[in-house]
Image (cartoon, rainbow, N blue to C red; front, side, top):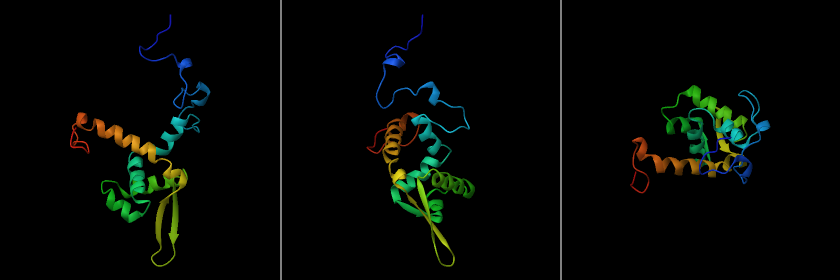
Length: 143
């Protein structure tokens, strides 16, 4: 006899955009992800990465100094790492502005803007649970 969780259809009966990834799509850490959820997590992975992305979704583009001021608890090393990670994933573009001193600004790519619904979903889910974690009330004044 096999175990089934009450309230959920067996894995083979589920379909739609959140259908289970086939076992062949699940790969060990360190390998290129193939499952859509794993691919998204690879881009957003790492402490502070979603918050750096949030700043770009709010601003569209920013300099390193603007990001550092917006996220003061974030160390310079981690901010540099996250900018490199998001640039390498095609979420951000790095633009060097000629002159002295040389300036660099980062801007969202089309792929980066496509992450807005993901981030909005994370915001809404977290806002609804903020009170349960002992945080501040939600935007409507309720926890």
